[in-house]
Amino acid sequence: MQITLIQGLLLSIAAIIIGVDYWLEAFFIFRPLVVSTITGIILNDVKLGLTTGALTELAFAGLTPAGGTQPPNPVLAGFMSTVIAYTANVDAKAALGLCLPFSFLMQYVILFYYSAFSFFMAKADKAALEANPNAIGKINVITTLIVAVSYGVIVFACTYLAQDAMANLVNSMPEKLIHGLEVAGGILPAIGFGMLLRVMMKAKYIPYFIVGFLMANFIPMSNLLPVALVGFAFAAYDFFNAKQRKYELQEALARTNINTHGGNQDGI
Amino acid sequence: MASKVLTKKDVTMLGIRSSLLQASFNYERMQAGGWLWAQLPALKKIYKQDSSALSSAMVDNLEFINTHPNLVGFLMGLLISLEENHEDRNLIKGLKLALFGPIAGIGDAIFWFTFLPIIAGISCSFASEGLIIGPIIFVASYVAIWILRIVWTHMGYTLGTKSFEILKDNSDIISNSATILGITVIGALIATYVSIELLPVIQVAGGIEVSIQTAFFDTIFPKLLPMAYTLLMFYLLKKKQISPVVLIIATIILAIICSYMNLL
Image 1 (cartoon, rainbow over the protein chains, first blue to last red):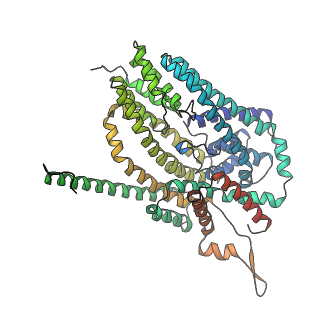
Image 2 (cartoon, one colour):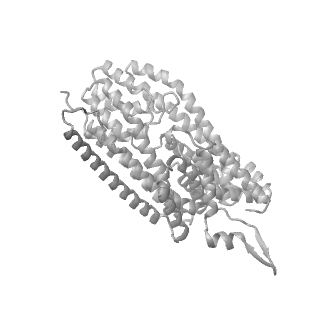
Image 3 (spheres, rainbow over the protein chains, first blue to last red):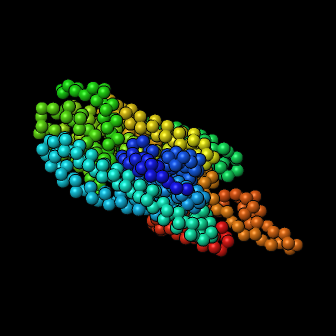
């Protein structure tokens, strides 16, 4: 289906607001689930937004900016998965595969700004030496505005201007290729979860991992809340045990200190 | 003894302004520009007549910092209480340097690796059925997290240096518990959201066709393949240090090849 000029402009405005939110990491409306839902509302197909958003969100679960690294851009992924499913009329899974080039593009734009904005720091140093708060405010406003405008322009170009080219490209693809992209869309969350495991997994956590996996595998559930509650129970159990161990350790240390009072404290 | 110049309202405002932390994010100083910007109204109030003291506070706060946006209010509250008491500049600087890393670590463990997978997992299970309640749960949870910024800021401000000890003593226990919760949910997310369905069928004597997927995997161990593929990705990311972008592209190519070979 066609995106109208009004819809294109609305998407662009939404992109400015959402882009700034991602830049600041304030309200988390930049996650694909929310971006796709908003896109679906603008395109008057909320259900499409919800299904594409859910899929894209999970594929991006592990692709986080934790530790200051810039991941593939979740904002563009959210917009484009829904837009591609809408204009080219493909399955949500195939749309997920097709939205990724846009997500990478925006990732590199942001990376460029990370480098470029280093130049503003010399100006900031000068303002600090002169005790000039207004200049600091101005620098922050300018950098944020540059990011905001970039999101607006790029999303308008990718959604409204490029829609016919995009739809033609997708429609000219062989059926096996589209099916392959759908298959990829089903597998891609594995990379997101692999990323999470890379940071979190240690041997001592394997039991909890197995329980979570088996619960979802063999117990029918309409949503994942029960698993989260079981996980919370494990976490609380461990928390209280650790507190207790720490307390006992401190007690033991205190006793040793009394025993060796006045003696050589370096001894074991 | 310096008198208190900041009101409760000023501290609340500082918590709200802590959202500006990344406004001029860059590789040279990371969050320094926004870190200073967020604190400027409070600093101006503390050092109102003394422009050389304001200048040295500004210079110090423009130094490299990279911490967690959702918890930064805590650090801001703590340090602004020291600024207000006109503590030694080196103490303030030292505490900032000592704390921003651990706070980033706790924040990443709690917000990115525990809270996000859980909220996303629950919200997406509604959204994939076409229910708008999914994103509503998601946004509501994060608005609550945002409001907590104000709470952290007040906490840091009131506890002052005491909070340094509390944080140092408990950060490992908290991160560990959060990770347990996160790992449990991720195990379930893999089973729920990664899908690999084999297409091939085996021809048995007498013209009976047996689908490998339904007859074998679905009856014995439904999500064995998704788990195996996720663990393979984990192995390649962790042990072979392959970038996620390479794995994404490789997965797409592999999926297309399998599609042409009628495997998937």
